Image 1 (cartoon, rainbow, N blue to C red):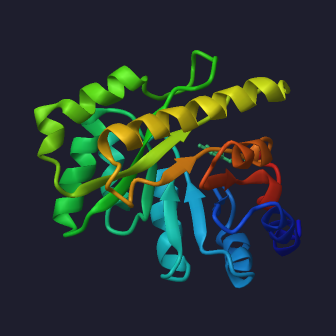
Image 2: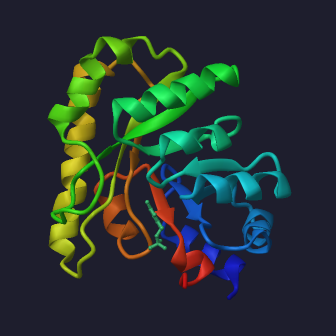
Length: 221
Ligand SMILES: *Cc1c(COP(=O)(O)O)cnc(C)c1O
């Protein structure tokens, strides 16, 4: 597995305004170090304890993205250093992220995860549920978290037109939120969508962050 060569190939597909999050979940620190040495700085993990274990073993200027479903009792492991939490989808988790952010004297950036796939099993909010959170009095009191955009996962399918329409839907959600609540907020700018199998489509549909794992680090067992 030549991580550096794979990384180069993926980066060749990615325009300058889109950031690559190299998804290193389940992969050893040596592979992450190799990608780092090739210039990669944004990495993604989906298990809080794995990320907390890798963090001290790797360069401190890595921006760590938490891309998985986060449980409230695990937020404390990543709160001191995480750069962006991609998949927040409840007021409960946001309250815990805020609480841990206060403890660590920092502001934690996050994205709201939206349900765009046709599959039932995936996590994520509807627009209605997201607005319910954002309008709640409790949410208004969470001063140590900052909403920076949206995240979504397309259906796992070969039907590229379906994938494209799901990504387009997420872009529409982003634009609606931007116009309604964040028109004067430059930090509300991220659309996290696209994985190894579909990131070129995601980029065409407006992704600002793509999360690519197996195409860089190889298949996971
Ligand atoms: C694992 C994972 C990825 C990367 O998947 P690949 O298909 O290996 O590129 C992206 N996003 C999320 C949320 C993931 O869990």
